[in-house]
Length: 282
Ligand code: PLP
Image (tube, rainbow, N blue to C red; front, side, top):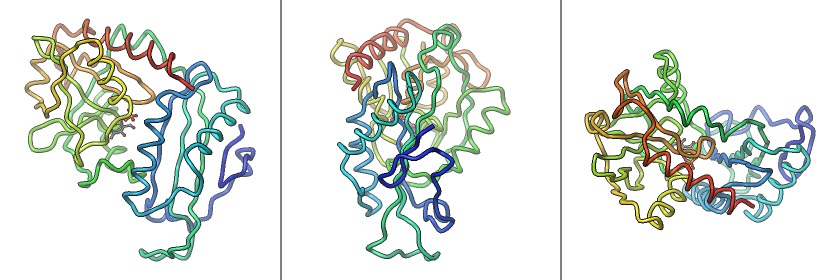
């Protein structure tokens, strides 16, 4: 596999990062995951805009333009013959002797690699996913896509131990989001409920694309927090993320959502999203 590191395209075993990299020592970095379908990038402009914002919020600067990043991603897709999977991108503040403060002229680290994976599977649409709830133990700037993912690693671990596919995190009695996904419910009167963007959650790119589509198709969206109790009484539930698109959630903490089967609203949203994603891929 060819990977990208600081402007160079290299075989993966020749790409090396310093042990002094601040991403490694401090988690001082930002990442993005972009899905690839039919060899093309999904929601690329949204991911590039969020990347620029996250890097800006930590006082960093991308070493190349986002156009150059997209060009590099497309070259990796071509060189690695990637048809379906994802591109992972990581930016870190760079490498120097360990110190919380950093040199202003430090050269950042920028890396990208591809990962092949089958993403658009029908099986998940037939059964849906199981979710376990856990306390949200993260920091207060969850709008920044930081590589500090230990709370999410622990949440996913707890979910797996309970036989679940994803963790939903709870704060002040309300679901914030999934460990690596945005959370939704659909009410009995077919309203799609998801939190409004704020510092409490990561603004999902899949969420942004999906909500725009839902609005265009006349579906009702309510952006507000919801509780576990409301989710358990909802007709449908779902999650979105770049690598899952939108998938139904049929079980929360061992209890069925609605009739325990994927429902019509989420199934329709999936069809709308997939059609649009393939049509707007670059
Ligand atoms: N929320 C969190 C905490 C995430 O880590 C992710 C993706 O990894 C998402 C939401 C979904 O964001 P996106 O749709 O941009 O992948």
